[in-house]
Length: 84
Length: 84
Image 1 (cartoon, rainbow over the protein chains, first blue to last red):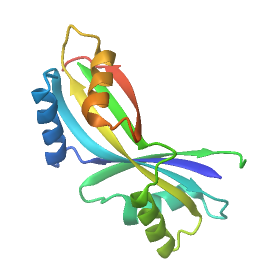
Image 2 (image 1 turned 30 degrees about the vertical axis):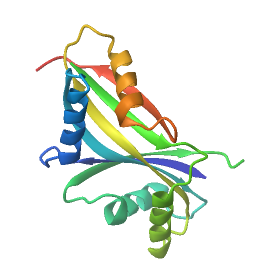
Image 3 (image 1 turned 135 degrees about the vertical axis):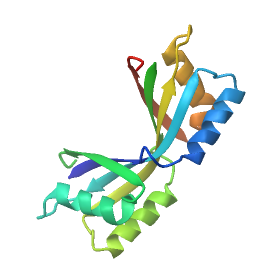
């Protein structure tokens, strides 16, 4: 079995209103040292036995569903784990 | 300056309907090897010079705003970077 961690972030050039809202909220709570906040997604997937290359599968899933390649970047870590 | 990465995940015992929806979507796209999906948040913060302990600040921000400690776990990585 494979444990996959996927990180999806907005591209540098894309505005992040949600991150701005969080930054403003932090400022209003007196965390004035916060200069920037960018919000992304983090996903943990469990993938079972497969004949295909896992990296290929994960990349295809990211491109087709998990991330929007037009405005988002993604990266992932794949770890093989022994089945309990 | 510090670059902080915060990962917020639902606790193991909490149901994740969003993750389930993504899993079902992946199955309908013939990614049948996917056994489980859990969705979390990933945040990148830039924190400027401060007299306080950065780890303390980040932990306080997570507890008060970035995560809901009742149903979510969080972890973070702090990296000191040279100011450009």
